[in-house]
Amino acid sequence: MNNIIYQEKFISWPIISFVLILDLLLFITLRGSTASIFIIFASFFLLLNIYSLNIEMDGDGIYYAFGFGLIAFSLPVNKIAGFDIQDINSLLPWVYNPKGFQSLVIKLKDQRSIRLPSREPKRIISYLQNKI
Image 1 (tube, rainbow, N blue to C red):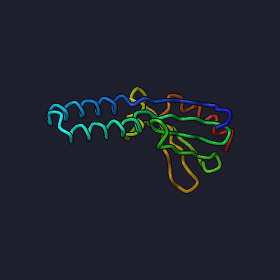
Image 2 (tube, helix red, strand yellow):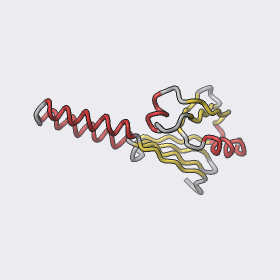
Image 3 (cartoon, one colour):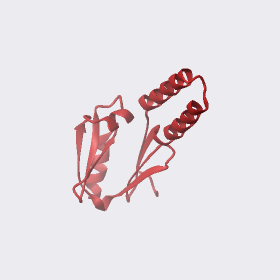
């Protein structure tokens, strides 16, 4: 990414809390067995890959990645057909933005759409309007 124009990071406290409580209950229930320890390590590996959402925008497009970036996506500006601000009515934007009530919906030219949480959706839209 060259010259980052906008950057936002969300840490998902609901996911972190759920995994930690589940691991603790599993460890107590199975009394520290080998299976419970394996499941706990696997869940921590999963947690490292989904505990946060990073959104960055530059002159070429939008880049968003979960956790440490193993799960990452790039969205060039030339693939965007439109955008909208919607109230959060699905789980993913809420999980990463529990204090916010809106998400940015990016409509692609291939008729798909991507919903991203944002604290400043109007700022992102003003940037995208200048690029499309």
